[in-house]
Length: 176
Image (cartoon, rainbow, N blue to C red; front, side, top):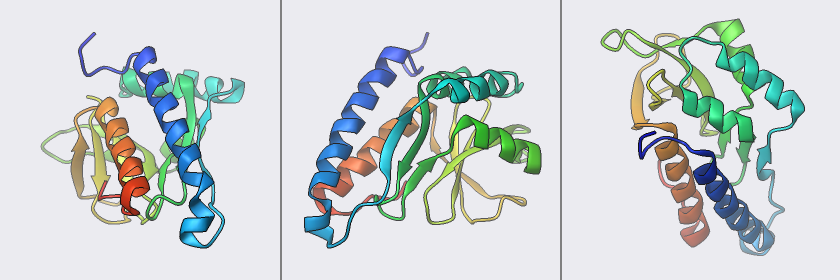
């Protein structure tokens, strides 16, 4: 296993740090921003989510780290961090795949990816077969233009964590 893989113990540590940060952020949110916080959580996978993970694992181009992630995490909803950050449940990823197909990662890659979430501002995150995560440049997934934002899912989760910490520190979520 490489240093950049997503071992369950690293993911558990990430979840612990994120949960503590989200709790701290929501405690003073209304006082700081003048309104109640929306949904800001990382939901643990339940039995229904686990069934979707089994189906997701059967998709030929899904990286093992994405399966590991969804075995433990159902979804990420951070409604108040900038425009929001969202990682969709595995079941929603499968629905997106069934209804719209895989996202072409570009002619030079010759590969396809899965829409796994969005930044709340209309841009989608796409996980590729190598584990890399891409962000669309526009809201359209028809012939999308993509920017690679992370070399693997672990780096993507680290970038999400940085966005959360930046928001807590100064109210700005960065540009993930």
